[in-house]
Picture 1: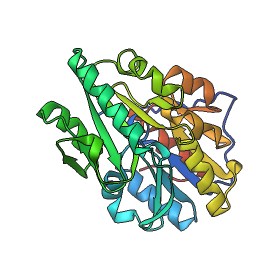
Picture 2: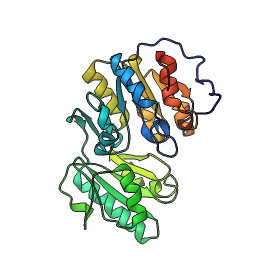
Picture 3: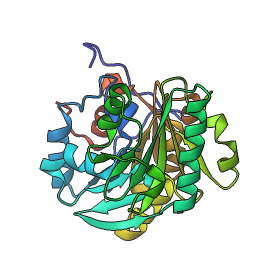
Length: 287
């Protein structure tokens, strides 16, 4: 956090000091985490205070459930995890919702990636199941990126033949995914969601699957309204989630479309924007 914190910016004027917030949902990479992928130290006392007040905190990420559960292991009790871009929602080890991808579609995507690789694109596929993620590519540069987001992963000979409920296929492109891999998936975009979830990541999911659909299901499950929900995001896979909350915040350094879609603007992920905004709205000191 800078020595002189920047003021909290909003798209519609000053944020009121009091709000009846019952659910706080935040993306991880580029939002809660800084650019070095670090969780802010002040999150842990903030979570304790939110729990004391009866406010549920929910990470919503393209990351794997097992990865999120490990990151929040000490405070996971009662927490709802919106994992794999909304295709898998788990609370206290119990699945609340999922949106599995047809195995044949997942296999077609994997074969498309093989053709891209044969044509010279530096890309690899991660077939994401409920139990594990599965990869064919074995070079250390690719596996290092996989390990960052998928603590449970297996190297297999053929990702088109995994024995698991597949919930999405993620593609890591060492180049700019929005300009290289994503356009190559145009045929799938006609029937499924092709979402650029980061500079190097593209996710393919069912058309019905996104963080917003998962969040609305969680709101129904808990009896929490959009007016009682605060959401933070920075990239294109967060758009539908922002629509599900009255208190929607784009990080100040978010993708331009995310800034346009959100109701408010928070300080950047490198300026502790999530915690500072929660603290401002709920009157909680930020450590």
